[in-house]
Length: 223
Image (cartoon, rainbow, N blue to C red; front, side, top):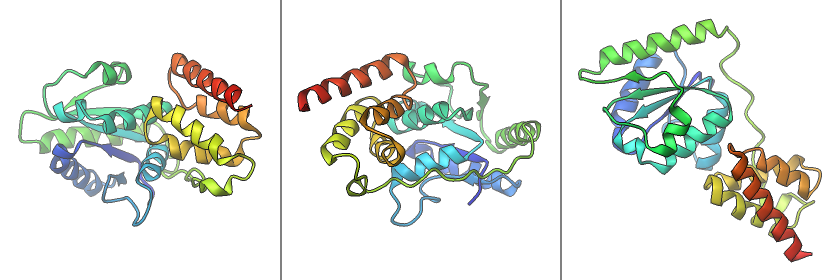
């Protein structure tokens, strides 16, 4: 389904995230939220990546719980990498952890407290509608990125090469590394081209340097 908004939240804030989703959808906005919109039998990480890439705005339900959530941090990192607009909706008076502050310090925050929350939902909805209107009327949905190819079908690469890349990338970006490696392998010209494409998925120059250095070391060991 086409959607303008991706809603990110941690499990303890699920009720608030669902209420917010219902409010936005009642006012004509297309929203993607897990687990509701994860396709049956789909790979969870792949669905998350696709949904973030297809959204125009990333809404973060921010609380002490999401502040400590590794999954939320990974979703925020992907949204930043995809250059999506991020709108943190703070439902508790919490200062972002250092890992999130790096990505959120320049964002415009909206507070969702004190209760009741509905007036805050209304303010957030108004901000989203205003931004989407100002940004233009291009279609909300974007073509989904190509599906991740099964490891065995990427014939130009050895399975061990792809597993090594997954391992090096996962140390820096988490479980989504598996999806990114398989997607990039479909179009990469050779192993070094694949390494460069994957390095581009990392946000910091230091992480890119570490990843490429690890890849080069592994190649030397296997030659």
